[in-house]
Length: 548
Picture 1: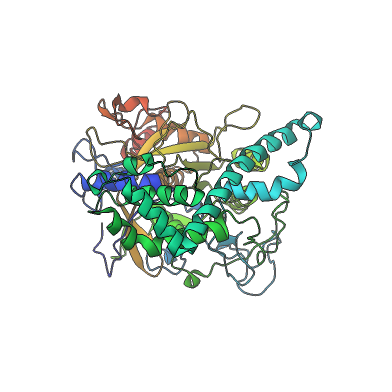
Picture 2 (picture 1 turned 90 degrees about the horizontal axis):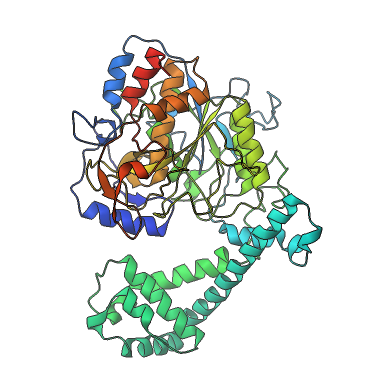
């Protein structure tokens, strides 16, 4: 990789708080890899990379065509020094003339579209979790509905609403109690002192804190639970219980206020400036053509990192080299910096990318509920019909993806499986028991393969670079190789590209620690359909031989 200029060094794990804990523990226990580890070769370098350098040796002298990759994410810094030359430009649109020149319904969409933004590019940073969104959007229709009188689609929505309602009301009450606890300093310290008296500092562990029985007082219960969570997130770095409280007081209050004011506040409405009706999943034309990242330190961070992995300018002497050397990044913003993406935005984002020429789509996000799954299914089917490959991150909860609800899903509501969707787990650089990232979801039936996703250096806004970890980083490695194949072998279909990447994956015959809390030894081959790691060299060799 290239020499970094003024890098911003950040260690971040995408998707979940649990993932953050697990990956940081994993990284602390092992040496750091070289920055270009994802491009190394597992057989010659003993590093679990994708063998990209060897792949480019095979491609020398071979012509390529540009391939558009839709990055459906939080937005991309299109002015970044390492991205600006690879950003897609709509050839049919005249910039900034307030006219929909190509008559696609999206005025001035020169580089993509922001489904979360106002016309001027201002974009909300905070949305609610899916349980709150679902409760708010479906309450009027289903709160008093008779399930037996509903259509099959409405019955599914009814069931989704009931799940969301139960979880939302539980969280709402818990947040109310926590806010009460932290708003009254005297009451808080009274409760904290009570808990502390039942817990000697010598027994300071999250499990011990949670075992404390403060009685039926909701404030005391709230204080206990917040403190246990806080201690877990610090890896036992506090010597005493009092130190834990005093050093985290400001952070506690900020978290509780955010939950109460935004996450579990049914009256919070971030969509006012967007101009759509959130309850209407069929609505398509809303949002704006740009995203103003200057208003927040978090907007476009995730999407920019993903875009850099796929296609950061190669050979320009700046920052990093992306995977695909002739890809164009179409930025489609649907994922807020905080909170869950909305089904209608995801569906519209997929359709926008397909309709405007994307041949590969990367989706590094996920959630547990999907109130308007039918719209997302229809969009995925639309992509399948138009020969577009969708790469989706498996998620970072260390869970079996076969047995947990997870959306978007490759399985349509009718039970059929989308042939154009590829689901990716997160692997580390280590060809030993630590190969599968602790936090990665896995699944013999639902996860297709693993790819580098741990300690990945890439682009973030304002000409900076950062190392992130998560399946959010693994998926764009696959999307990048898919773009590489479609660029150098343009006659390949989306399904053929998927088949090549699966069949050519590198399959180490080793036992690894099973992701999640147990960490028990399991064969790496049991964690995905292929039991393999993405391998660009073998994929290019297979595509060139036409042996697929």
